[in-house]
Image 1 (cartoon, rainbow, N blue to C red):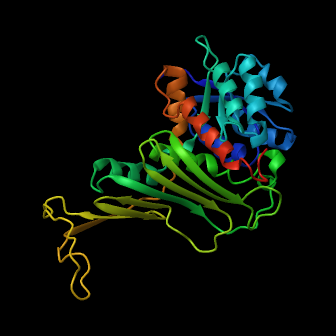
Image 2: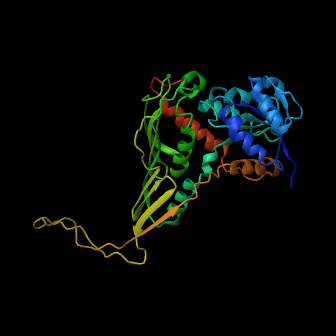
Image 3: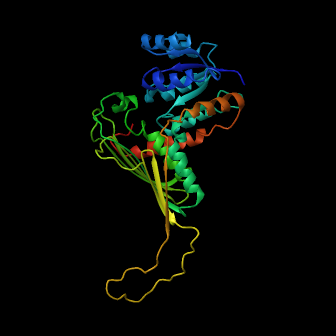
Length: 347
């Protein structure tokens, strides 16, 4: 086993205190938390209780600590760019929580700083690339059983009168920078990596503050596939997380259950041609009997997205490929930024 990565965590709020702390504590063979940084001393003390690490009240002091090898950035969305830049310019590699940053220009600058031959390096924690549902849907699509997939719908909907900092623009609030990086990343993967065109409509429905909580984006991918994604904090009834249309079948994913229906590949379709004649009576289409098959899968519902930490470790310490490239993360930022153009939510 390679040596531990000595890591300093900055930002010990909701994500830093729960997800990052738990995932790091579960991997003592891979990570050693040597420093924790937050403006609130009590949060630092909780980290010190778990890891026996040093604590800092400002990021500058933590970055200057020679023992810190990698800076894990879990601060508010508005600070990801500046904190990543500070760490990179000090020669520290960075693992940054989503969103990567707020503008494509910022993303390109961080990539430049984090891709020098001698280091440091930058990694973006798009952990939901490893959601079981997303992986299984991709496997079913790639099997070809649904035929040529031409449209996919993705949703993450609920109804919530949210009022925390995630509802305030100046802090990087709003669903575009909260759930948006995850679902846009999924969308772009379904699009072939990039999109040719997009339509976006965003608004505030139920949340307070001045940031958006309802997003509709329709992408046309470079693979000519339409991906229709929606994230809403103002939808009172549930909707399927996945709907997939293919030329030979369809799929619906709701909760932990996937159901897909497809034409039996063992049955050859009859050759038919368009008939220009006027049909008699109430005849529509033809009397062809299609043979369908249906399958379903109930997933265990266990959150496996923490595997992103293992990928990060292998990429950083053993130079193995990291599944989320910096360019992919930058394309997500570009889409998020473009979605806001011309709206009251633009920066």
